Length: 253
Image (cartoon, rainbow, N blue to C red; front, side):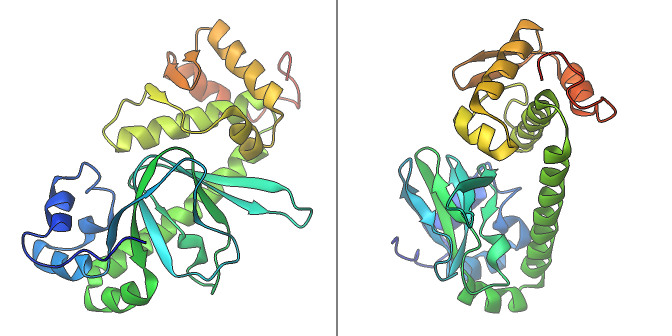
């Protein structure tokens, strides 16, 4: 467990938050420079997890939320049958654990998809801090609202009837999230494996591979391993919105 960063005007956290490219997405956005010292009292910065390491596990005591600083994290739940169901993918600047804030234990597990750095936000301290810093409290409400919207988007994505619609929606979602990080919205590396994509979207791995190949043959994307380039965003958008298509109305679905 990383040690809490010491406070002070020249503390490493304050300098890194001011210089971090994620500052427009993370918690420092919600506080002034004068209040940043209070925030750094409770944040434990820069904890490193190797690929496959758990940041936290389902049903263990809920103690902290985590902001992804670099790398990527997937969340999942274990069903009553003992199967893993992937519930989300989190990129730098996004917070994990928000769905557990009303519970005493984590509602899901969070696992690093690659070498990942996170900042830990112990809830016992943040609860007090949000009362002292109204801007931070408002920001948390905003984050919780985003979490609900993400759940709605996932439900909408899974309601799409064809594999093409689901995968196009996922690629467009990742495109928008990379753009918010001031990264390329059309050329990026997928942090997750094909089997995780299949699990998340409720598809077979073979189906995911077929659709990626089909999109590539149609000139919509260029894919090599996990590196993906989106060549025709408009066409992908049209595919993702084809809700009026009859089930399996597209060839090979």
